[in-house]
Image (cartoon, rainbow, N blue to C red; front, side, top):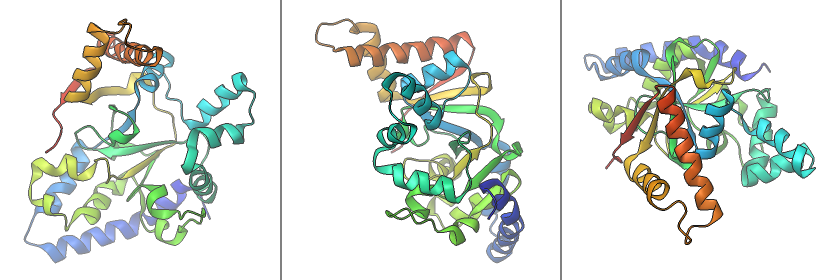
Length: 276
C-alpha cells in the first residue's frame, strides 16, 4: 500500500466520477455545483491552536507538530520518544500511531482542516489560524472525508484502509469530495451556512500537509468573540492580580504575544460571533 498522498491521487478519478453522477442526479438543482464553485474559490487550510502553540508558530516561523514537540520535550525530561508521545497524545496514542503507520505518514506531516469560514474545530484550540494558499490550489495536500481517528480507526488500533482509501483525494478533487459529503445536508440550501456546515467542532474534512506551514503563510487568525473578550479582559485588566495563578498569567501572555505578532505582521484578526 502506498502512502496517504499516493492513495489520495489514485482515488481522484473515482471521486470526480461520483460527483459527476451526483450533479446529473440532482439536476436541475444547482446547489451542489454552486457549493463546488465556492469551495474551489474560497476554501482554505486551517489549524486550531492553543495560544502557546500559535505564539510559538509566530516566534519560530514554522509550525511544530506533535512529533516535533515530543522530540523537544525529551531533551528536557529524559523520557523515550514513545513514552513522551503517549503522554502528549493520551487516549489517542494507540489510534494515532496505528493510523500513521498504516498510511505511511511521515513524522513531518501536519494535520489540518478544510475551512470556508468560521472558527474551525475549536476543541483543538480557540485560535483558528488560516493559511494563505487556497486549499484547491495546493498540490502537496491530501484530504479525507472525515476525522481519521474517530471514523477510520477502532479502539484496538485497527485501521479500515478499504473505506479510507475510497474517501481520500488531492486538492484537484477536494471540491467534489465536499459536495459528495454534503449533498443531502439541510444546510446545503443555505449558502450562508456553508462555512459552519463544512468545518465545525464535530464535522470537517481532514487535511494532510506534506510541508509544515510557516508564519509567513498566515492569512488570518479567527477567534470566537466570547473567548477573545475573556482572554483580553484577563490580559489587560488582571494578568497580575494576586487571584490569578502562574498558569493563567502564562496563558494571558501567550494570547497577547499572538495578537501583537499578528498586528506586527499585518495579519488580519477576525473576531467572530458564535454560531447559533
